[in-house]
Image (tube, rainbow, N blue to C red; front, side, top):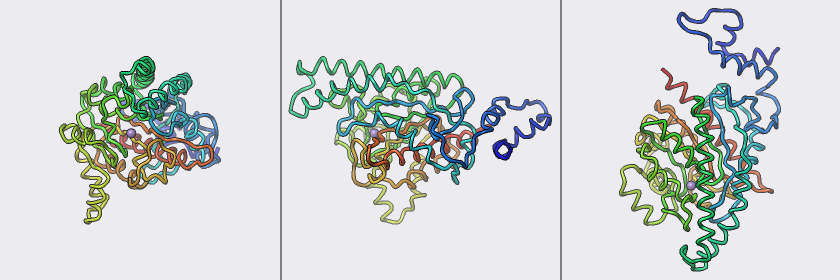
Length: 384
Ligand SMILES: [Mn+2]
């Protein structure tokens, strides 16, 4: 009984007590169902390993936010393993407590876990050996046009295109049902299908891209859908993305720097420039407001875990010195929402769990929790 009272929100309490809804409206039925389904769920209790992110009891039909998983890391160039991130994050996330001072109670709108498609993991494992042979060949001085790798490359590229179609179809299914979708990778190639699906449903939106890398390479190592090409591919294929604000980047090629400088669709807030501004006295809050001001009203957040300092993600595929602290990143996303902008979707990628060090999965679970909370909060703030 205690739990039931604890979990019923004001609307549901009034509905259950027989009160009439405000004139001209009806009580939201699905809202009531969330609460009723949660009767036995104690948010202050021990974490429940029920196969869902955070051990939450919501199902995708009734939750506001649906998390789609992409266990996939075919094109990772250095340090594979991020394909195992969804399972590791699900496990680590049940240890997390739910009070979020920046988005109190936002999770009660419902965060559900879509069934993980493990055929993606099987395909990823199979194609990974082809991709490794291609990478070894290129690192040994070979060309992507050499006969030895042409067929392997084609197989990898076709597999990646099929993964993109899979994620786009999963995203479209939940978007059509009126849900907001967050994606848990996998490497940074995996959100392409979700961003495409959003491009078909929104006229214009921005991307807040937190990353150590620009990911602006055209077909890195011959892979058309590489983790290092995600923003290049988005710029090329999703014209609805009018602005990408890249934050924390600190390891990029001259070609990428030139491309970023040459298009108004990209604004770069590189790690050194951010540090320089801080050294000269600009607060992080002021910097966040400056970053947010470069973005339109609707924003997708793409969060590569390697944007953070590498003690947060020691096993990520391509760690780089420097980077944002966890709280700086959280403050940036919170500033975005505080500005009245709406998060229309997000991804969290490149978390690489390790068997003997849980910090990567722990950080991933915490970042994911903050992204969910801020996304749900932004929906409340931008209603009406
Ligand atoms: Mn990335």
